[in-house]
Image (tube, rainbow, N blue to C red; front, side):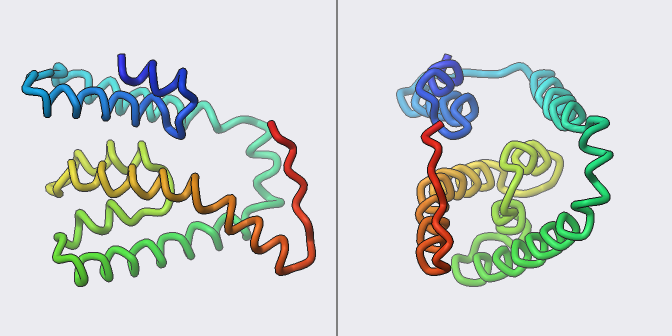
Length: 160
């Protein structure tokens, strides 16, 4: 129910955040909501299917134009994510692998599902990724605006 409310409110990752807030609130209020174990498998199948749907003929045909930039982005994000994970672990005392899964700078849902397959503090990964996602949605547009002003290359907001 929380997932549908989050989606209707158009929250960033509304279905995920809404469900998490709803179930978390129910837990805090003393209810003991449970989700059958096979739902985890269904969630992983769903995420895999959604990712698979993004592979289209158009994507493959445009790959050659964006292969080098894509590889650069992946390598740089992975390196910065690992560095961030190490720093967060050292500064906060959070275990290294929980910090690494929490520090991945993209694919929140995928990292949350993937972290369930490893011996990490899964609830901490969920919290770190959720806070990261919310802050990115709030802060990143401001940073893009600042960059557009500093570079003298104004960015037009379409309002969509």
